[in-house]
Each structure stands twice: as structure tokens, then as C-alpha cells.
Length: 233
Image (cartoon, rainbow, N blue to C red; front, side):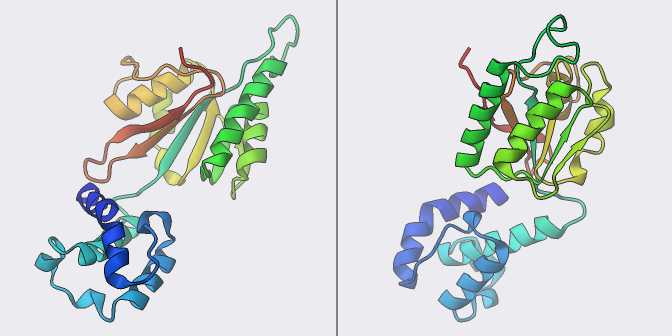
């Protein structure tokens, strides 16, 4: 349903600009309070339209998207969120650094990916990282670029061989959460969220790369929305 109305909006924005004679911005890029204000300024009484008419009128479909988004935003049973999964940057070997901190190459790659994410205005509210040094250093670089409003936090349960189900069961408690950990944990977590099995690998991670997962609001299932990797392999 949401996808249906989204398609209507994105194909009718230019026509709506012409009809309203006002500057209209795609509502998907707006804060909901600003979206409501724009609607009120462009239409005298938009919420009086009948529901059946809304499905066929491009102007009122604009309103339906707002109403439906409001429902999803505030429903306890449905929650729109993004989950960003990151494998730490490349690290030093144990014989060089017992803590296996990031190598120069690893730091450079994380900084490059973080800069691209910043350029795309990726919104991350909080970063949680494993107890290992390389994960913390990766988190600090991403935090420096993305400025998460809730900061960065060390979190147990993100080590390479930890049980992914413990994290998966609580992953919806925070919107726009970034988790920084290790392999095989990250690949197993991604597989579990999408397929329900840790054995069915659905994405091959790279050091410092980001995999963005989102929940389909219709099917309530996890999907890979996009990925940002340092290399094409």
C-alpha cells in the first residue's frame, strides 16, 4: 500500500507543482510537520476528501501518503527504520599489534566510505560497536563523519562467533542504528533477518563497507535496501 502511493507521488510531483502554482517538494524528503504545513498552505481543506476518491486523485494521493506514513510512524505494531551493518575496517595482524587495531589502509578505507555516506546525507542516530579495538576505531571514524545524535556505544554480543538471534530480537529498539562488528557475525545476522536462517548467506561483506537493511512496511520483512562497499569484487 505504501509503495503504491509512493509511486503515485513520485510520478505526479511535477503535475502537482503546476496545479497548485506553488513550490512543492517531494514529501518523502520532508519532515512530517513541514509536509503538513505545505499541504495546508496549498489546499484549503484537503482532509475532507472521501477515501475512495483519494485512491484515484493525484492531489489527494499526496495526502494519503502523509496519513499512511503517520499511521506507520506511530503504530506500535509497525515501525519504519533503517539498520546499517558494518564490518570493521582492515586491521593489523596480531604480531604487529596484539589488539589488532586498524591498519593505515583500513583507516583510509573507513574514512572514504564515511565521507561518501556523509555526502549522501545518511542519517545514523546511534552507533553500537563490539568490544574489540578495530570495531571501536571504525565506529569513531563513522561518528566523526555522520554525527549520530545518540552517540557511539560499546555493546556486547557483536563478536565474530556470538549468537545473532540475541541481537536480532532487539534490533527494532532504535531507529537508524549502525552496528559495527565482525565476520562471520555480520553475514549471519543479515541472513537471519532476511531468511530466518543463519546458514543462507545473502550478502558478502567487505571491510569498512555498509549494508543498509530496511523493513518492508507491507510484508514486515527485512530487505537489503542498498550497500556501499569500498571495492567492486
